[in-house]
Length: 276
Image 1 (cartoon, helix red, strand yellow):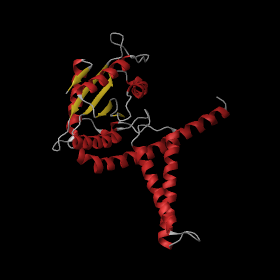
Image 2 (cartoon, helix red, strand yellow):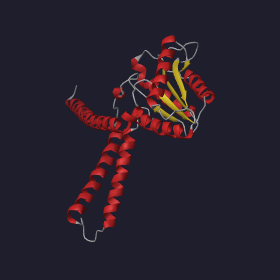
Image 3 (cartoon, rainbow, N blue to C red):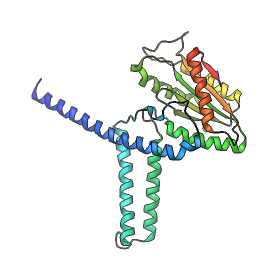
Image 4 (cartoon, helix red, strand yellow):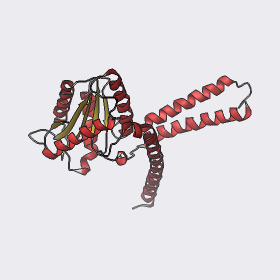
């Protein structure tokens, strides 16, 4: 190997190490922030979810574009906070500044916080909402359904795939299929855990939820990924379904646990769809 090639490989290896270090730092920051927000904002509201998997199972996968976007948002946030601090300390960070400028900085900072919150709710691999985003949406829809006395549907499912090397391909293929399959703007799709997806269906009775679950089964069955074995010519999927008209005394966790138990039963019994 020539010195030139060795140099290029050295740079590439070094760059990879630096990128990994940056990714690890940001991943830790996001994970810690999300866990704190999750515990403070959603944990007590959801109730007991002991039957379901740990929400930290999903790896903090980020590519270069994700890292750049996050750094840009953080930099804007830091710049706006610096301006606000200067204006608070001196009364004016520059000649002619006014209270309006402080308000502008405050509003810009609030926008940055919302951007970071949105970033923390996105699964970078699939582009869908992650578990934290799902939990927040479930609380919103649960409260709405409780107030309006309407049905709320939840579908939890995963492709039956034993090949760990194909997991990333499967997740991407399923997410693309879901975005084409779930039509209503009010429905909500998330990567619910490491392997499972969840679809939340507001104002939907059991018949409507059944139709959506069957549509998911059919469309995912059409997915073809080299190395993933099909059953009867279809990609196998296990689906758990729960439909509730929430009562004020109930907790959203009950619905999650019921749907997850139905999903586990479908997986164990090799049955495509199981209702709680």
